[in-house]
Image 1 (tube, rainbow, N blue to C red):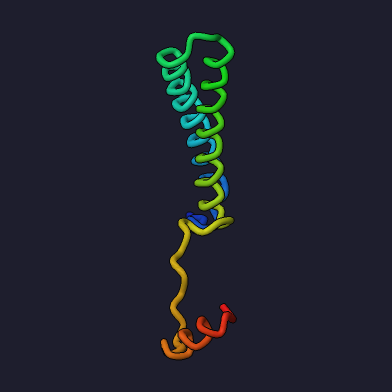
Image 2 (tube, rainbow, N blue to C red):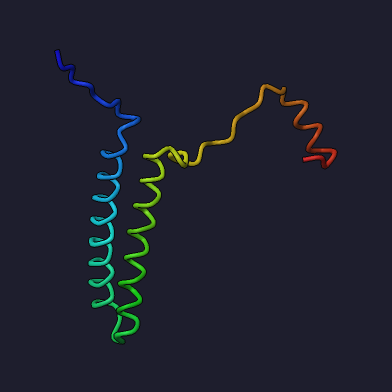
Length: 101
């Protein structure tokens, strides 16, 4: 008589948090390694090498934050192109020529 109740995917926060934590750790580590490798190849000073590691880590954390925000419904996936209104072209040309736009 016990029913197997499944949580629908949009409301399964445990899976979303697990995926975001995994994504954040992977992107942080991989981008830090990429920054360290790039700093080793391009820079001679230890300060600039550490700066490239920090820059890579920041890129990884920022990209993980953006994708996790999308998973939780915070931000749109990409910038959407502007919507074309239903106004006729002659109206837009008239507004542009008058300097109203």
